[in-house]
Length: 602
Image (cartoon, rainbow, N blue to C red; front, side):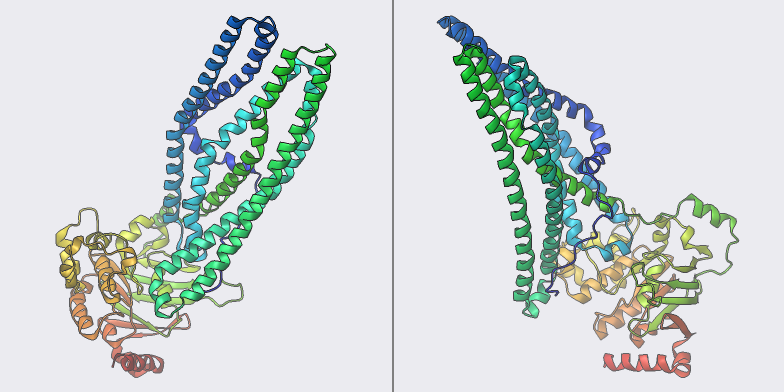
């Protein structure tokens, strides 16, 4: 297990402004815009009601209180009570209006992200750490939902409230109003500096959450390796390094937020204090009524929260903008080409190749992220697997066998050359159709947290049932399924780790053959089986292979003997093709590989 922190996912090439990033969410908000704008309107009305309260106070102080009128005081008190209750009801209505649609927006974002991950090429998943993708689909989307529910609305509501509030202040007394306007410029400058610095720290924190998630996921999935090699301490140290780094970043965020909050609180308080002193002097000189001063100060105090919350709202907005960037970093990745009409049209006008089966014609392949000077993995591979034939692919470790098999279902795209299935170029096929023709079984079997039945029938069409399931399990010699607690309905657990390696491999083989595919690609499908089980599987597999065109990666002579012919792959090229006996006589490299395999088998 790795003990060093994993690298973060690639960062965006160009940093967008927070506003431009957040505007990309508009297509998701459009379906619920009616309730969203209604909620914003209700919140504005509720917030502006708080500005009416000082006007009622002014009337009470200058009227009933000054005139010693108890009836007027009670009337004013009832008016204040009514305004307070109305304000509370309106804010509750706002919450009700946005709760359901915003959760629907989050669900739509999460659904689209998952669908995009399914359609992205294998090369993308090879580059990106799974923890980074998990954090984008969980933590980041939760941040976006919270932003849409509260900060997005109140950035607008508070801006309108402050604007209306200053109009009221200037109307009450323009001199005192100008005193309260003095902090506007330093507040704008301070918020701008805060926004720039906080966006960098927020991005770092969210990337580091992805790194922590990656380590946790790897440790949980690889717990047997961790425990088997006694690596729990080194893994704990690696996790501690990442957790401490994340803690430091979060403390940096807290310091920035504390500093802007203190700044935004102190500057307006100083202005209110100056206005209080100046207003008191003017009341003493008879230039200002006591009710006007009370109303002015009440209005100023009512604007404290809209102003002081700017730092908090800006912080949440920056985190939401960063989450949006991280979300669209995945959504902007190019999907696999589905093989649309242009390719199909080109294939229709091109002459159809008369050769059936599987044809590799001048196939070369280089991984997209390989250094420019690195040699290609495959170089000019030419190979013809005749219809109904089983071809074994043999080669030394690193010769490119697995890569070659991955090209048939287009898990990777060719660098040059072409692959034909019964004369049809796979590049012109829709991927959905291609993958109904080709079934695969990998050397490292992957099972899902589902029942045995669901895992196996994943390789079949929609109408497959118990008959097909039983046939596939018989071919794979997976009779152990009947001994499981609920038989085929037994949940195999995450990654199928409740089963042995050989059992997982047999279920993966059953999944490959259950749909009776026209083309079968098997990457050393029997490597985890004991000799006796392997012999039984091979006997059943021969019947299946007789009705399909198959390419089988083989390391052992027993697997090679399943094939009609053998292809030797050496240094990215096909070095020889023939029967097992022919290659033993004519190829020193092949004889050497088979002698090593035989030695391993004994």
